Image 1 (cartoon, rainbow over the protein chains, first blue to last red):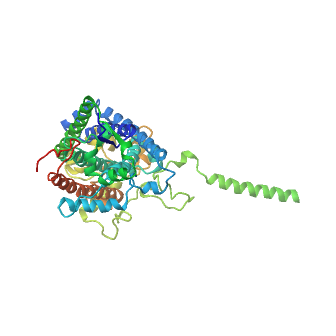
Image 2: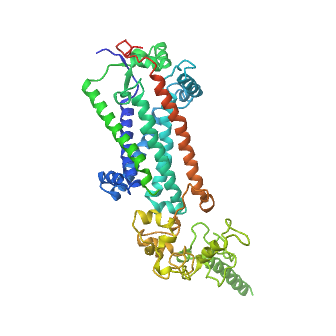
Image 3: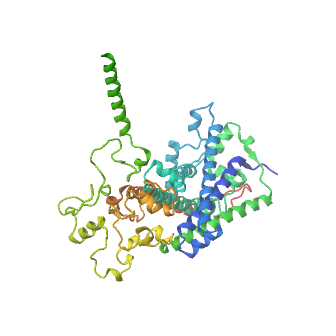
Length: 274
Length: 230
């Protein structure tokens, strides 16, 4: 097979994405199930997890597993960071940290939507990808801390007044709505419905992207690799068709669950006492 | 002479140490109503107590809430008549046709909280039977001095005074008046709403425009040929 794909994610990074995908969907289903418990839809969601009380247990434990995964990811970052090239490496094009170029590319990209300017020459990570990545840090901190407060109220109210739980509940809820809305609408659209990625961008599952497509969408990245002579080393072959089918099945199942929850939540929102 | 002086010193020293030790409350005495102020924290006695820690007085001509509603006539006559009930042994005394009414006829919003809607609690399971005492009535089981032990811990075993300050009848965080009744909740709510709405206002149009724009560009694949004909 020809090596016509370029490596983009390591197996561990792909595993992290699968981990986040599965835990996020479970947290969404159990959280929405309890929020919408007054409706048939919410009762059904809770039933899947064994009822109103069990859904809470699942929500707490999967939440804790998520936080553990998050801590492991931070350790992974510390381990994988290029400390020799520090601090320049942190602000280079391979880093996920925001750069001034991201802001410039954002405005150029928007201008391109209206046909005003050329499409920006993206490097390895686009600004929207960096936003998605860092949003998880913010979300984990906000939802994780408020979630732990509510999961262990006797401990948390030793350190803060009990009415802090009223506040924690609303912060948890609104941040969760933001996270689900962003994933089920924006992240899904960018990964599946754009013409460039339709019907599914399987880079995060397969670990590689088509070289010509990457040359089109991320010319700075490919150009940089060509210049430094690293491109040939980064090329890989595509996976077996069977495996690709599996990626599609997993991806579409996730989409189906997400869209089901998005529509269900929107339809049933007026029926709930908030 | 020196021995007598030494005896005096020992006695005086013991007296000082005794006074200091006696001033420290034992843990059992430390059970107080407010988790934050705790009798103004480290003051031995300032004479300052929170309202619900004081035995009810015969009359309360000025009904105010510190820092919220103050002045000579802070409430309308009807609001004041409700407010003045917050310390009564029978909070509903003198209400006409009281026997024929349901709690939620008047306390409509109070019947919409999570404890009522989700946990199926009835009002009386916390507020007690007739006559229902005002929650700030000194002897009421719901007085914040003993609420955690008398009411909350019936279900939440181990509830503390701090835990019991959770607001059961939570005001709607979106309402403007919540900025006065529960400012932290209102601010937290609107800041979070601001972040969420801001994110969607930025990224929803961005995503839609991006999707539309990409309909007008070629999509190249490794086959070498664009997969569409423009």
